[in-house]
Image (cartoon, rainbow, N blue to C red; front, side, top):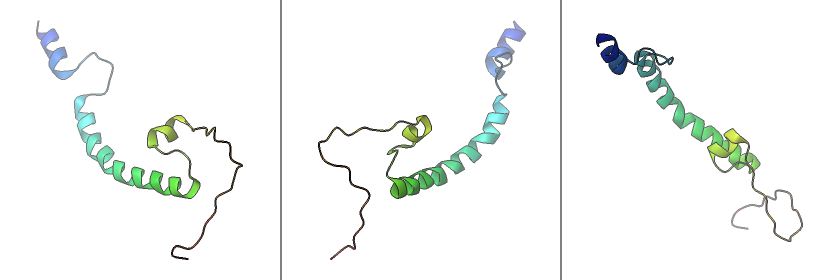
Length: 80
């Protein structure tokens, strides 16, 4: 019974990392979220692909079926 209780509390025998390692990694992962999202937004502004980070991770792109000719990216000054 003691082994069953230890497995239920400590997670022993599950094949995953111990909870102490997860607790050590969690602050680093949380710190990386902000810069990762800002980098994704910057790349989106530059290239206009992958609107969401999940789309970028899975390589999902959207197809437009509009009947207009393709135009490359155009830039003009604001207020002109």
